Length: 284
Image (tube, rainbow, N blue to C red):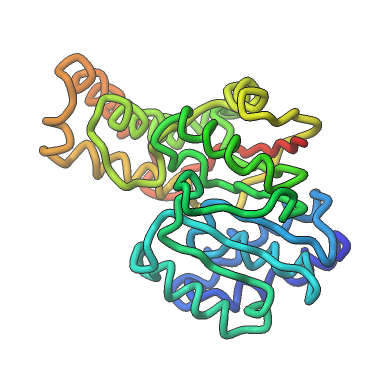
């Protein structure tokens, strides 16, 4: 599979996703972003891939296209199949399983790779992939332990996440929304949003050796088409308007969160908030 093939297939991959029934343009932009990531990675035909945090399968579909008929993607997520809206993880997985990529994919929902019952043979996979899922982890410690757990199973790690460092002022709304949500979680007001533990690229690079990985490459990833800035602004403002979540915060943190939310309301647009950039890192 060469790079132009993934770009060319992005539209058909997006159309095969269940979420495309509700927002075809949104799904296409999300698929294009992931196709651009994988096109720059060395995941060739016939590869075996372990994907952590697969969610509704946006990256899973691209990986399955990249590995070809002779490859295999084991897509794992700790969430149950009933999780997600307007399309659940189970519904999205069923759509993919029924399509041409289905024979290349094994979905395992409700699966925590830190559980002793979850195990794979040493070197079972050529690659392990985490793409836009690491901020869901409850802590950096949990992420470190997960990366250490999968280290014997795969020869190479491919990691992609949002970059906390803004490059322009119109990304500040997304940044504020992410940081405020992280403060809710860090202060003990737990939820199930997209953002639980936001961390910088530098923090990841510091963490990798602790998990037995050696970073050996990386770069930026474009996000110009993505709608996540709007989604996280809406999620943050929803949190700030939830009395029980606010009440769970210690008083000093509550005041800080409310002030930052005031700033967010002042700088955010009703729609079209530019997303932060993203980055990718590879390790062996």
